[in-house]
Image (cartoon, rainbow, N blue to C red; front, side, top):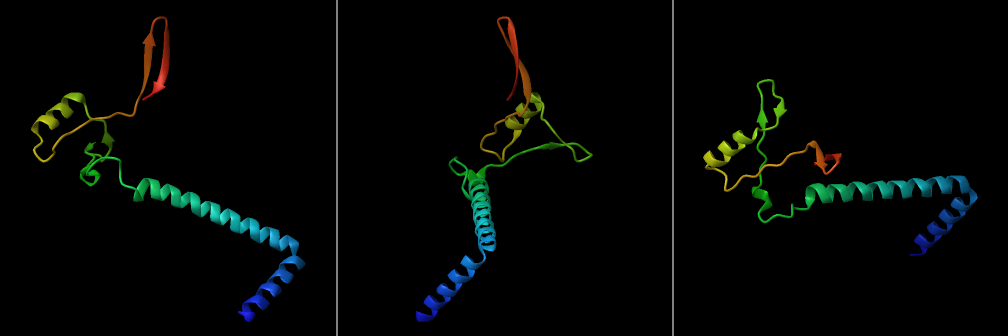
Length: 113
């Protein structure tokens, strides 16, 4: 324990003797700890935490791709056919990421959906 105390005193003396180095070291450590916290928070929220649905491990995303390998949106009649004919899925739902113009009365507004 005495050795640790002596090491701490030497460290204190060295850091007080070089204030610019001390400030740079402390700021670098603070930025590193902050960046690590942000990355962990994102990874934990997006990857590690399960989705807020019962049995979320059973969710799948079905996409339509063309011959060139390009993923395209699914037409509503195609989705209805898939939902009616699919036997491997318990249920199916559809969503879209699109922009549209909403009009009411005498005005219109462009919104992302």
